[in-house]
Length: 302
Image (cartoon, rainbow, N blue to C red; front, side, top):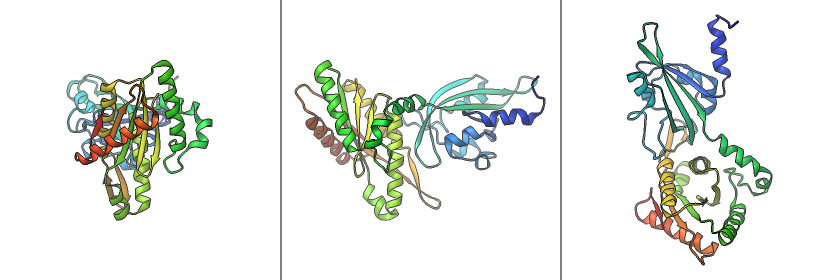
């Protein structure tokens, strides 16, 4: 027999790995479980009583478009009573973007009127993590200790493997080089610890913005390199523009009460026939500088 004690159900919700929160019709947060804290970094004390319009989570879609003011699933469900599901990116308290699957349902009173809504959100990177762990033993010797991403040595080996597969099976791949805009200024004005935090959050966001089959590593300094498999020219350009859009929504705490917004420039080159690894990397690097000279916060692909 199920318990009639309301605290029993509260405790059950708190034990869920998924994030759960309730809002009233004004989108004021009435309940926030431990799963939501784990996924966002924000505690129950920080969130209960706040309004979704405060935009702490700063939900964006896969194109980087903000949803909290336009396109919010919660707002739409409160308005029409229809359940919704969406794949979005929320902003973690530390600044990086987390891919989540959001499910929203209305909360109704006894007379059927809508009192608010409940949102359940789950980490959408579980599949990515599962595939990463298969490579964990190999990668332990190839990790960049700052970002916990593969280091340059590992990426160089992965590039050679992708090129060999291309030569044998004609499996196309692209190379993306990402550079953090204005990184020297961040280091000079906020200090190297702040710069290190920026690199960590940019790297996390880049890895979560791509697909499970893609490989992302730190190439050196403030540059990251991604090997994007089984793409054509249009798909490579779309992925590069997606990464720029998502990274542009990253902001990182650097000092007490101060955050720094991030933008990146990306160059992306699709492997061409009779082209070696060094050539495609050099081409992606050149295209990245085209993005820099073109105004930054953009992607250039060919």
